[in-house]
Length: 158
Image (cartoon, rainbow, N blue to C red; front, side, top):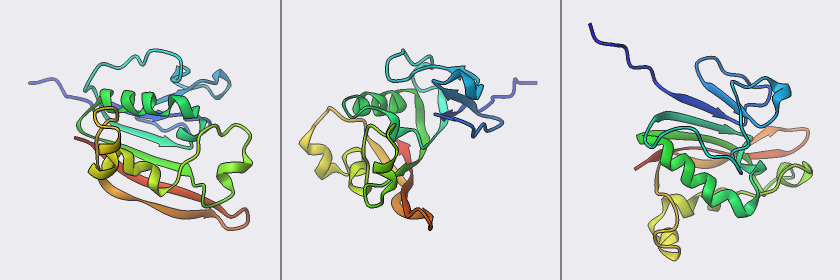
């Protein structure tokens, strides 16, 4: 009998949202992640084309603006062809992007065009990783009282 191949799934910036079956990664030891790594400054320990799925819920906005492209390149590097990146990030269309003092990059629907749309990608030819849209980035109000708008979507490595 052959060995069962297990999918590799990563939950980036897990915080207190620990997900069984995922490698839960955070830079804060106090949240008890499976791996404690600052992915802005550390080498990513996964090999090229080795990860099936990445969740980045409330993660990308904590990456400094000048490091965003490098982090997106690393996500693309470690995903298997066809592997997916699911994301949720506060949109600049709501106050959630601005109210948290630990948010250091800012996102909206158009931000993801640079990784998926050939016209936007042409501006920076060869400098950005290329993804295909699985679930189009869309705005969703996740907290009516606080008027927090999130951009959610799923991208696939091509």
